[in-house]
Length: 331
Image (cartoon, rainbow, N blue to C red):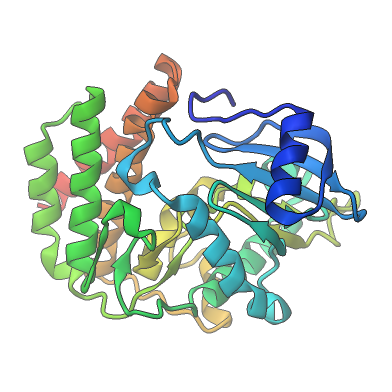
């Protein structure tokens, strides 16, 4: 995916960056082009290890408010996840990290979205249950300072309670929308009113947990299945850069891109079996509508700084329009 936020280096420049920052040079093997924000390269370090190197956007590249400092957020998440590797949360190992890059180990397997059409229904159901269990274990991580919102101090989007953090997150996107003249199809004041109407539902959240918020199938690796799919397994989850501390229910918004996330779904069954809790009360359903609104805003507003075209804007607007309608239907 082409994006104006991507920072590209030649093989010589990448080797020099790694050598200067880590003391180990590398040979560029390939650019990984599936990402939407950072540039990623597959490399082989001089010590023989293969790795994926992700580069943050150039320092002068315009980004959304919540995207400030997210490279450091991803490195933090990899460090926090490391002890969970033996408890069923597969993820790459963090090898090196700097202010504008990180390097992680290469996962076995293939992004789920690239093999989805070859998976038998039984394998798909088993993988969704496994993903639910992984998500529940991910949600055992809590912030050290007890605050909600985005971890990077550069964003300025954290608060002592979830309502305050989420309101700030939405306000920041609306400010970004004004900056980029994004066509939201609804007045910012109306969106702020919808968020304010959800205050009681938001106040039900009293324990911040780590939320990936980008668990669509492209960020979930699975082992190449056999013909009958019986040996399909998740080998890792990637791209933790958009993580924040918040309501575990918010995770369902991106998980929905891969399949059903309702109370009777395989994903929720795996989540609950692994110790997670999701009670589909009216308050939770109200919050889910708010989180869908937030994702819709991101998908529309990010098109400005990234230089995405009309098709991508229309995709985001479709989601945003649906979520606004859902919130208004709540009365």
